Length: 204
Image (cartoon, one colour):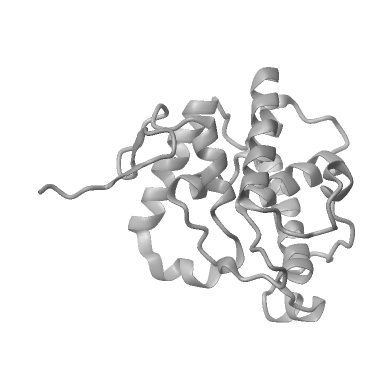
C-alpha cells in the first residue's frame, strides 16, 4: 500500500498533512482539533490540560487590550489563528523539543500554515505586528506556566527563560464567567473558539 499521510477529520473530510489544501477541513474541524491539542505537553496543575484553543483566545484578548488603535477584523482573525496549524496536526511541541524534530517537521508546519493563510485570507505579518503579537504570546505563556502548570515566577524567568511579567488577571475569566486560568473542557473550548472564529469571519 502507498504511504498514507492523510487523516480523517470529524466532518469526514480528509486532510493530507503533506499536501494540504485550504478545503480539507471545516471550521468546526479546526475548533475541535485546537480544543483537543494541549499546551505544555498536556501537563497541568488543574484536573484538565490547557488547550491551544483557549490559549488562542487568551492571546487575542491580550492583543485587543494592549493596542492603542483598534485591531481590524483581519488582524484579530490572524491573532486567533496564530497556532491553527497545531489543531490540524494535533500537536503543540514544547520548545525544548523543537530543535530535535528537524527541517522536515518545520516544512510540514509551513505547508499547513500556508493552507490556513489562504483559506482565511490572512495577510503576512508586518515586523511591527509580529513584535506586538510575540509580546502577548509570551505574556500568555508566562501566565500559563504559573497559573496553569504550577511553575513559580522565578522558575519562569530563570529556568524557562521567559522574561515577561506574570500577569495575574485572566483576560477571559470575566467574559466567560469561569474561575481565572482554569482550563476548559474540550467541548467548551471548541464551542468558544468556533463562536469567535465565526464572528470574525463575518466581519472581514
